Amino acid sequence: MLQLPAGQVAAGHLPPVCPRHGEPALEMKKLRLISKPPPWAAFLIILGGIVYVIVVMALRKTVNAAAWPWCATCKANRSRNLGIGLGVLALGLLLFVVGIATIDGDAGPMLLLLGLVVLIVGIVFAARSGYQAVAGAFVSQDGNFVEVAKPDPRFQQALQYGQAPPQPQYPQYR
Image 1 (tube, rainbow, N blue to C red):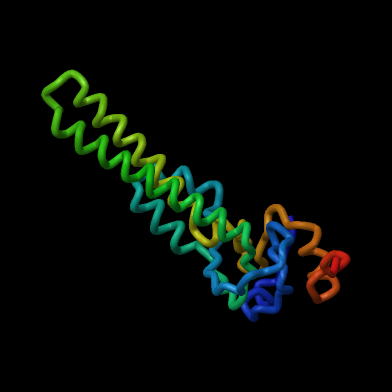
Image 2: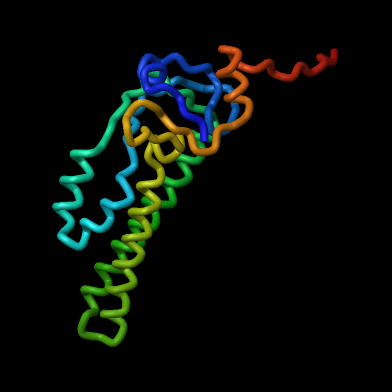
């Protein structure tokens, strides 16, 4: 796990290399990075969802990244997850509506339940297409660092030397 100072990320002082994939950045995106909820907060769900949400929102740390490197693989992963998520959501909605329409038949309740499960799966896939989830970066619990779970060695090298790593040169044929 790589820890970047939150001030450095907020100021946009990152090399133009994707932290997750090590590829050159196509663009530098403005991202809002947040912290993960503390592990003990899951027990608050027993008290009710609203209590959990209030506590998690109160304890959340946020860093607004001025320029987060975004590569072609990140863009493709986001598009793929969003496409799958929205497609599965549409299928779940269709199954749910058909289940309601045929509630008196034998298959109606089963389609209703299946539609609900497929809707939940679609929501999970769509949520995984968010910029922060694709970037794989989270703010630490104290708010002082941005943590990249699986950084690419090329990003670490670029961070160490303050520039993008040299790209391989290929001979030109004429």
